[in-house]
Length: 315
Length: 305
Image 1 (cartoon, one colour):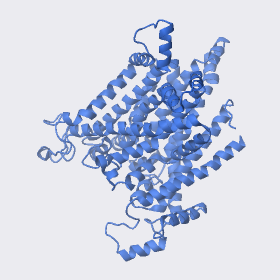
Image 2: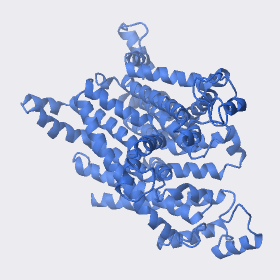
Image 3: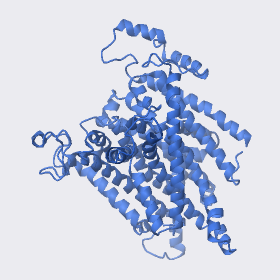
Image 4: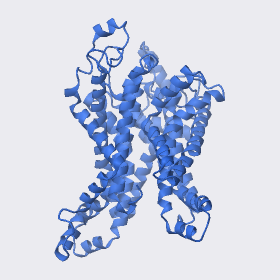
């Protein structure tokens, strides 16, 4: 509808501002929201460190500085040690480098899981909502089953079942975990997309499109999805912290990422033995997780308010 | 309404059936078997054990055997704890896990709902910022991190509570808080958003303009309406608390069911794993029905056919 109506209006009335559009308006509203800006900044930093982390890291994430910890009585180096800004872990590996590897893993989670969720959830929801009746019934019953599955149990089971296959070895065992997290997570997006389809299906512009003989496929992809996309974008943004949290939790109990790779969750698991003497081993990765979760939550909240002007004034 | 409830409850059966099939075949796709030990057992022994437990049958035969016993309430033998049946193991840990989950649930509701109301009433002022900060900390701190922090401060440094175990009320405090942290934040956020939504409704303006005292508008009109959507997240929250407590149980050494959650997979203890999955799946499916019914009961505008 976005493009259609603006095109019509442009002919009929002079448009108020040259470069105005629903997306641009939404972006303007987003930039007026201080928490959303903070979220945007945190998310940008997170992506930056995830992508360029290995280049910025002073050492490889698995390189041990045995001399340094030997000189320290075989204890992890505290932060602000010479050569190691954030100290080292108990094996003499540079904490900053390991945190940056963790950032890379978390960025991969954030990205891969949401791709799986979109690729499965949006088509399933769109098909269910558009065709309705029996198709809808069957697809929604499938989501019921996935919904009832104990998430973590299913993810753990999948991870263990396919660990030995090439699929399970991809990306140091991470790909499988991401895939499993996405596989239990698409249901929410499917239901949301379906709801959007159902309500938009009854609108006049869809009726008009049908009347002039536009094909179903075109109506769904060109008219329904662009109009119903805002809540889906919000749900996906708010789904990122869930995915990051799930990966960190699994890594904490030793599933998913294989050593010597350093997920933030596994860093905490390694560090908790030393938490009294060397709290930085737990505190630093915990802060990293917290900032990533906060960033996506604020950005998601901000997007929701920005994309839905009806809620204006609520912020 | 009764017909609706019955239909929803009956619908749980095919859901559980599908869940059991997927889990069963996935489980048997995991390489290795329940007799894998650090020191490999002789092949003859493994064969004898497999024959004894029917593990040499085709998988679909094993599934039928399992399903037949399951509907009769027999969860089968444990392959790892060979002196106990799965029924006994589950019965031992079940109530501990439920107790922990329910305590955390109550704490989450009792803290989360007032926190959200408090934030909405002081919108964009001190109370809002305070309550919002609390919920941000809850969202940003994974339960395992919260557990470690609670243990370090309250058990190790201050010595107020034991670091682990499950022998009495003082053992319950830290695990309950650790488990409730995240749901408190979610419930508070939800309540706040819902309250703010209601604040702008016409009937609230009407209530104010007909001269009702502010307090009674808040308690009689706003809170009652604002809590309706909050109820929808309570079911998933309780399910999350009961199924998600295994990490907390692990960290605090609590003898609940959750400890078997991961070990049953790594030791290929097939019948124990099936029992866990079915219990959790039932809990989730059942709680969803309860919430939907409760929802219709509280909000007369919703009618199921």
